[in-house]
Length: 373
Ligand SMILES: *Cc1c(COP(=O)(O)O)cnc(C)c1O
Image 1 (cartoon, rainbow, N blue to C red):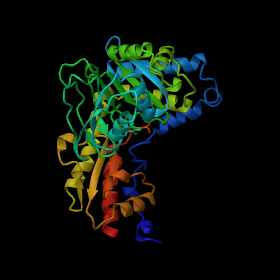
Image 2: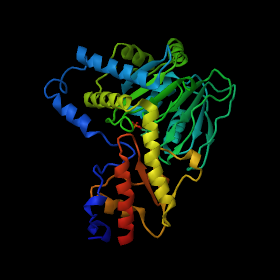
Image 3: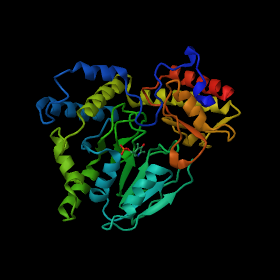
């Protein structure tokens, strides 16, 4: 048996909930209990029923409230998660040429997919080293700007905004920021995400908060004659979403848990309260790392540090993988850095469902393990 798996944490260092992943992330036990409560009346029933439609309508209304969406903005949803939305956006939102800010694995996946789409022009890519973020450059040849609110792979957050005074669309991958970050809807045209991160639900669904300009663009491409695979057709998603539906069968549990979490976030005081909770949680971990000789925040500019996914570099002589496995043996899971980033790193999801107490215990637990490795 390796040393790391024989370390037993004293009970007062064990968090109440051991889930600290960056996604899928902590689903509240209250939400799970409420789902179990539904017994024979929900899971296993038709996704075309009236009750189902009102669940989707509730999600749309809840997100409109949470984001204070202006008149004309619409909540669109479909099956497949953010990765699927990228494909749908390449077919149905980008007219000809997009500009991508690339600063980690997720932002680079979208831009390389677009680069391979034969019906689009070669995209402009503005890249930054992992651990920082690039800045968009206004360009009259660009019809779509692609940003990432929080690069989950590196723990870098960037401000959302319109580059210059162009009428180009601004698409924002907000998968690990949405539900935990204040944003002005006038600064984006499509703010899209999957619900398995701050929204404390399960995967397999995408949601997009769309401006009237985004809806116009979808309709304009729809009538242009461009061929679009039906399951990626945003005009179809718009039609279904307006009726409280999805084009094909969604994960019903995902919708249920999402609805529960939206209501929870509204009750806790909305996005401002959620963001300040996450900031307090992230600060616990950044302050801890700053005060330890063997740890340091990966993102050097404090202004670019994420408040939902905290990345912490560990001194080379202490393998982060050993810390991760020692903690896992004590029920504390999903702390690995993003694999492709290839650093001696821990990554901690500090989403709204993660309590500050648990983060204090986590920091103390890491200290305990490191002393004994
Ligand atoms: C998790 C994540 C994705 C991928 O989401 P899927 O639901 O797995 O497609 C994309 N972008 C960002 C920023 C993410 O955090």
